[in-house]
Image 1: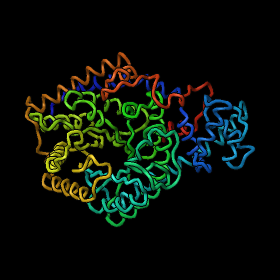
Image 2 (image 1 turned 90 degrees about the horizontal axis):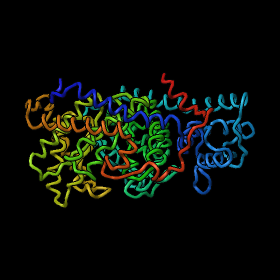
Image 3 (image 1 turned 120 degrees about the horizontal axis):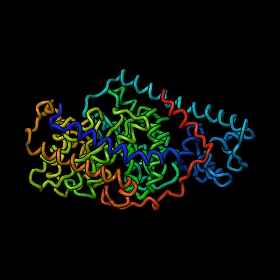
Image 4 (image 1 turned 180 degrees about the horizontal axis):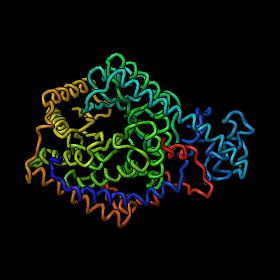
Length: 509
């Protein structure tokens, strides 16, 4: 039963409006492709590695095909037609391409589907392995403790991640090096130099996954691994995550648009394919609504968070994600000097919990109002942990006193883990006892935010989501649909376009 007494009809109306707002974007994604989607197809087909200059072979092949025959028909037909005369895919960078027709197109499509199916079979096997390991090692009870480890050096990340798991972390997140979102290629191999994060590469994924499997066996509980599938290579990184058995991926429909100035059309097309991969891989996505509250006021903009979550839900469902894979994000970011700030936080957190009862919600700690007063910061993090327990959040990203430092002191990580352990132990099943007074402050605040959400989604459905983004509706940042990075990588599909990966994924066994 709803602790907030939410009107089911109002909730249903919000979802209907979100679906109407999302439909033109879904149609855009169904009828267009991008250079990164096509590169992801090649990666599923087994193409890997880079040339002597570090340019991935998938980039070179896609660029060559685009220069000769375009990508309107997809990468699969020209490449697998050309592979009749080439044994090594790397030879294709100097091949002559054509879009086959008739029987030749049928044969090329068959070969492409067989190659891509092998990659998807590997993703399926990894999903089965995860289920086996969860059964073997056990799955921690929520809320899961989520901790970031990213020094820039993967070989330093590994022991720090294992140490964090031993101290109680259930989810290890390796955030990416600053600026990787804007690279239109995925670096190759293990990396040892990154700023404020570690590069997302297939080899780095493999190394960290192996390390966490090792410590999972030691601890007798499965430790999850998270990275970021966003930016200009979102589909490729999602594919690599599936191939290396990551468990969660940051994958928001608007984060790259608002905070990285990536073209909206490019982002929405890429996110649909990436979410299809995540759905197949059993990966939980994490969305980025918490970021809106770092640029907008957390009280005034609360309804934009809910609206975005409902849009993310619709986009996720359409791509095949289940509710259990929708790690919708929100944050504890209200100014602590505001009267009743904690009650407002509880209202917002409980509202999200009730709107998405089956979603593994990801709750983000205070950052915007953290200051040099580390003692006040530690107290604020404790209030955040308490709100997470009281409202039944699923994933709690622990806050740290040196939150402003990209790679916090290890001692601060220990204190942060101690903080969340104490609150969870002391509060126990406090969520069972937390029942806001009917008609009281918390209930009325939640209902007001929901009403504002319905109003906003109505305007977005009428005017269009691309228009709303251009007007700065989310995160108070204006991003027009005809501008931003990566727009030149968007291609409208021609009649006869063929993508064997999408074909297989949409069969949804």
